[in-house]
Image (tube, rainbow, N blue to C red):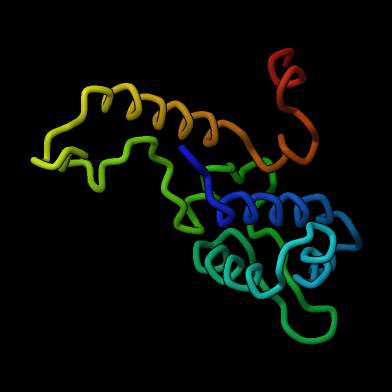
Length: 145
């Protein structure tokens, strides 16, 4: 399974935004996030339009405008972010759940293996909050908690 730049960059940008939530309660400009995370501003604009539509961020216009988290970092899962930018989280090569990946529409021999892996990835990303990422509560720190 491969997570494209859409999902990775959306998570990076949201983590950046979450890290700055306490900074004088001001909205964060996408240009600032783009510079800090080395992501194209136009690409971030596309991602944040999706994140806004899905209710993960709010926007403010005008001087001092930018974006804020719509929910707390603690209640925003990484899976929420990845899904908001339409990133599929499946490890199989099947196009749809009812059609297999083989020419005749059958499932390949390893389909259940990859499908199970996809579910485990989904469960893991749903169990990790934006706050976990920002506060470094992953890896050994997460296992000890």
